[in-house]
Length: 92
Image (cartoon, rainbow, N blue to C red):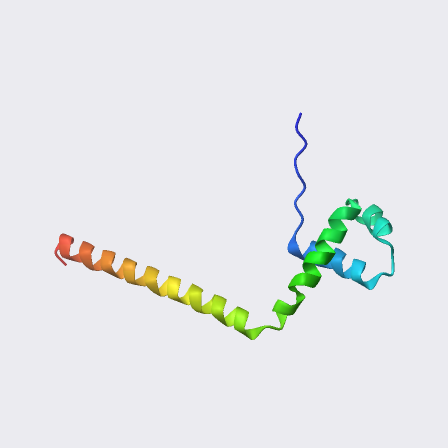
């Protein structure tokens, strides 16, 4: 029988990473507390620290929003064309 892989939410990962950064407990103590392998905690901690600077970056967020906005306007255009075509076909 195959054991199902555990999935952790982003909030849980952040919580564990922050506790590891605080260093009030050792990584092994945190691993025992949350029943996670110590290597996984170190990976989450490293990833958290690597991506921390993007939190304060305004350029990253606005560029992401602009690309999403363009994608949505493109989709609106496609749907409007379909609506116009169907109106023409149905004779309205």
